[in-house]
Image: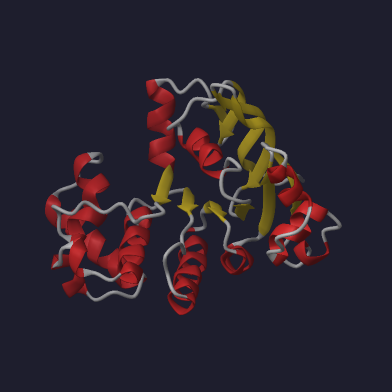
Length: 258
């Protein structure tokens, strides 16, 4: 029996003026699986994520979440997506004016109308799940290191027990040790929730750690997909160049012609 596709994209196109960023993306993510989309800067990874989240409206194509096509992005569609998802943003995106616990509980209080005491307890529980003490909840985000801010952002992403988690460059700006700590926490929390996960990154160490499958986006299309174990022998010159960080190769030649 075929596994349920939690996310299903077909023929997704998005352009900005003359710049065609997505050129017919087809992509499936099975329920309970972790997919990492890799690709260089400017290849459309963030645009793809924003289309799935409903932040951008695709020019054409379908986006199905749990069998529901949300590409039209009606208010009901956006509410449906918001209720299913949690997000870890690239720069943590914490509110400077709120203490850490209220950052984590923000959605619970202001979207789900949870009592503040109940929401705060949930926030402290989530802090514990990402390895931070309850006292951290009373601090301002500015008092935290970059790694702690990422942990708080992860705690906020899981606070509403989402069915789908999105991670936007989760290890950007972190040293290798803290990046590995964040990667481990992502793996643990995704498994604990039984969630479906979609991440975008150019960090291959992160991709190998958190992915069940990896897909590469290049020139607006998915050009390869496979497991972390398969990526070193992809037989795709663009994938091989990207994975091994080589300056010379077909991707560079494409850039030179522009």
